[in-house]
Length: 466
Image (cartoon, rainbow, N blue to C red; front, side, top):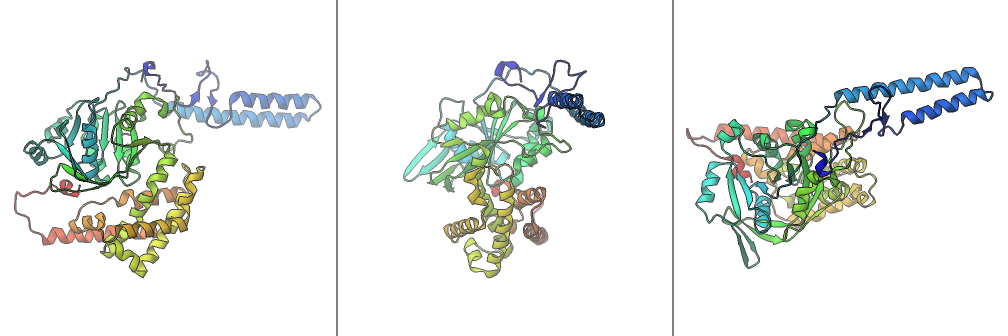
């Protein structure tokens, strides 16, 4: 980023004018070279006022040793950091791409198509058959709200052809909203990562956690070339219709958004690198968030991460507990409340999840967050949601039956990883996840051996999973 848009690429290390010769100042450690010099002067003054010379020499050696350690640490950080050169001025774009043909993707595309102050929304279709289906349809996205039918035609389809992926062609995508199932996000984003860089913003709307970390590890390890990530949680209740490009709104909700920042330093680093100004005060990181929150009918609001997690965690915890058990017991949600063994497992899982949530450093200081980390509150919330689901079926159970990929890595897997980092017990989470994966593998093997496919026939699995 250049100085034009007010973004500073400094990394939290305040450098003195003679930084190559002298000692630099570390903000993150809470100590500084000047403070150390003050301690050194105080020790000498104490010796001059009748203190023991040996004691003063000892204090001086200790201070100099500490300074040497600080210098060594700073040199390592400085050597490992790729200091960027000034980039071209950031020119914000209002063009928004939507990737995902699930209910949330259609709802977002329909809402954006109704705003005439931005360019027509770009709807990214991942198969040729979907592109043909759009071309042969009314070429619009429709939403039914009660007895009202709302058609929106300001939508431009964009087909991701195999040739484009192989040739890595296409312009930079500045604003991308992704509603794909988390199990497919890493693979699909990998096909267009050549169109994403530090000028891009990606909003991930799903009912899981840890997708951003997986994308960074797989495709964007370089922080200087990494897109800005926005986490999203949609509470609007939607259902399918007979038309693939239409939806039925059951209950209007909200879209909660929050800028994503990694929860810990990069591997091997002792210090968290900070940017000044912080991301929430820069145009590049907040432009897409500002667009979405200003969109009529989307009901989007921006939040700090603790506030956002407070909104999203109950849904993610419910899915982490109920979905794997429904798939393992091969039952609907209502039967989980009736089975003694299922209730015992749910209590064990809730206890481990409550402990992990209580230790999360991102939310430990938030008073509004503390109710979520209590076992009693989570147990009551689980019962309430199971009663609301009634005879509804778990999506994970259906995915098991069809041999499709599931989101378990971003449900149980996320909490297992965070629990290990925080030294919390995750034995039940690990056992349930291992059992679910084992059953999934067995069912997939049976499907591969029992179902004959004609030669040349193909099925677009991702199309039906959405």
